[in-house]
Length: 331
Image 1 (cartoon, rainbow, N blue to C red):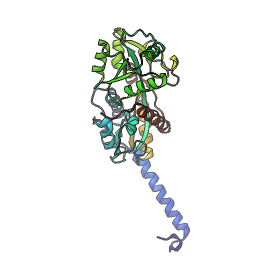
Image 2: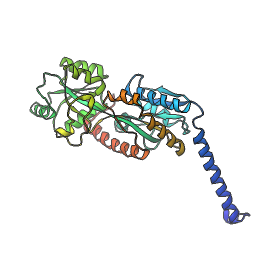
Image 3: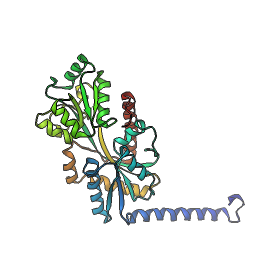
Image 4: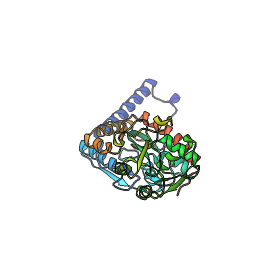
């Protein structure tokens, strides 16, 4: 209807508009107050029992206890987490579908030639639960006691030292690529299908260097089967003892690792987003969650949606550069 030729006075039109706005606001307020009224799905792009799965289930259990509605974790591995991400991105934006973004989602846009969703366009990012750094270790036969000594050896033997990872394009592979770029060294990448075979070979001395996750690598450090040279975060980690960071060993700004968060499809009402944010950040304060994740070297975050978005944009740039520099292609 053309308001200029409306049979109703302008004052009446204004009143109608205000009434409609109030009704809409009240409906949103009521929906947030009542939310959730049914089970919530939480898509995770990894198999059960891994860090992402365990953290999603731990947070989901806290939400279930708080709200009386079940949070069901749906493991949809495959496609480098893209299967789970696409399912979540195309779900109804009503607060009943959650997605756990991880570092893989910052790597994939550059690693993969085409994705059927956009991480920044198709999701509202609620909070980053925690960041978990990696660790660089060497076989005891390598006479390096720190990162500087390893760099010196690598420069003296260009293209000879081998570094293993959990797969091409994995965060641990790309952390090594960032290391090589920053240190100005050449080493041979040996990809494995997971941490177990990679650790088996570095312990056996078939490869000299390994960038890996804290939780699977630290037991081998404690048994002296491998030697820890550096942590990949900007801060030292209690789980790694007195192992210094790579940043403090001269690779300034070296900061890589995994992270785990909560996102919802774009279009989810803001009041529900903020209710989820409050509940999720409260959940990760729970001692049982913190004790479990501290063993993996986790640094808990619990940031705002705006801070999480800024973090994600920086991650996309950092990992995009690493992928391009490495020439990595999806397996």
